[in-house]
Picture 1 (cartoon, rainbow, N blue to C red):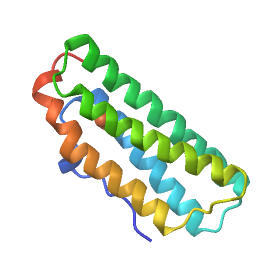
Picture 2 (cartoon, protein in one colour):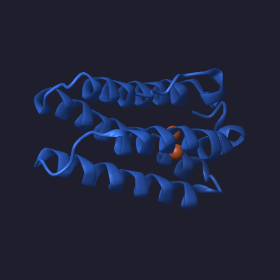
Picture 3 (cartoon, rainbow, N blue to C red):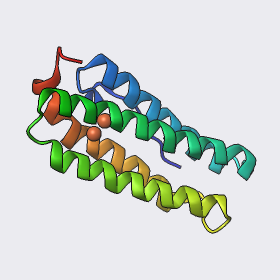
Length: 133
Ligand SMILES: [Fe+2]
Ligand SMILES: [Fe+2]
C-alpha cells in the first residue's frame, strides 16, 4: 500500500503552510496504515473526521490570506478546495453510515489530490504570500 513521502519538493517555502501540509500528509498516511492493518471503524472514523476537520482549517487559513492580501488567483484555487471538501465530506458521511470502505480508490484519490494541489496550485502563491503569513 502506498503512502506519501514528504520531500523538499512538497515544500512551498512558507513555514506555517508547510507545517500544515505535513499534518495533512500524516493524516492521510495514518488513514492508509489503519485501513491496511484492518483497524475497526471506531479507530478509523476519528482519523477520517480529523482529516475532514483539519483540511477545512488549512483551507480557511489559505483563503483568509488570499482575501487579506488580494491574491489574484484566489477564485480557481478556492474552487479546487471546495471540490475536495465536498468529496471528503461525502465520503466521510458514507463511511459513517457504513456505505463506504477505506480502499485503494479513496486513498489514491487523497494522496494524488493533495500532492498535485500542493505542487501545482499552492506553490503558485509562494511569491505572492512569502513573508506575509
Ligand atoms: Fe494547501
Ligand atoms: Fe490550497
